[in-house]
Image: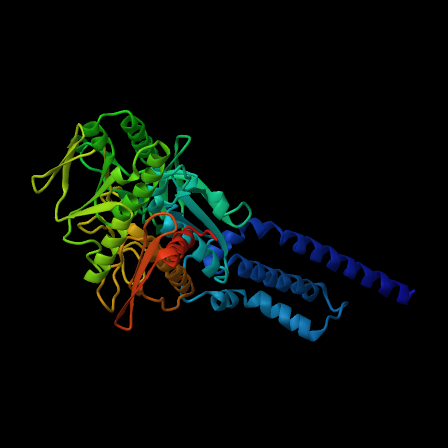
Length: 497
């Protein structure tokens, strides 16, 4: 009887202990939805918060047999460990608290604004660099269009029917960790770490962020409305240019000598890289179409009006001469040291007082930083570029970075500012990924280093030229190989293989 009573008593204690363990263990599930708040309060990750709650619950469970009496004997090391977990919970929290790094949230929300060359490359770099920061990454790309516009190729649809828009979902497919938002950012609350954007379908949305990368890029410069001509600023403008020169060719086929000469003359206003590539591509396409219409290709005249004294003024003079010679081979006549003032009724007035009679004037005036940056609250230079330090951090705005055409990026060693080209944007994005990861982990971040001296020019289909300076020597590559290198730079900048 005594043995049976002892068993009943022991069974009761075991039953009570089992019920207690079940209740407390089940109740541990309740804080799961609060783990992000616990993480924020104690400055630890959600995973660490979960372990701490588990340790606390284990300590509470061990206190039950201590209160229930000596009927059940647990291994001493388990009692000691569980008791310590229960009593030392605050010390575990203190030990787990990181010394530096970004504010702890359930997810690390990183927002990239702009789907241009800098923006898409920044997304790719951040995907790679932030994998090991200990927090789940929520990466958002905001762009006004659902596609990446290959802006440096605007001359292509001006010459041929070619699509230069790449769907963003082609670059970042569903399920690969990038949320794509079609909208336009209107303002940023830097203190609250929140931005506002207008959705393409209408309505304003507020979005919080931990990290913000402003890569809003640039806009093609427009001439004044009364200056006439067509500015090559968009795919729509490019299509208009193509329709116009094709119309001129058809009209020229039945026109008299004087009118035909005017219709077969074309002027490109602006002698930068865009103007060089546009004039070469147009000269080739127009000559090919003219021959098909029974016109003499030799009668086609394409003028490139350059305000500088030579082409590619930032490079050596011999490279300028080489470029001008290759353009001449394509039927392009370069006029130096003058600007187009206006085009009116087929007469183009130049700054030196001379005139050109032409059926079409195309403006290629370069690019300017996105003009909306200052209204969003960003510190900008006199040129409208965002002020950043050597690691692309925006001055006075924690957690905010900027790269690409919209940022004033200077090599701290040489003092030389980066150009507004797609090759610089890609290199900046790669380093940005390293910078953001270092800042998130409390490490010393790398600083900007200028891109090597290399410039590529497309000079019509399958023709190009590359110049670079290495070890004090100027190296020039031209022809088909030059074109292949140029095409590679375009494709690489747009994340195309």
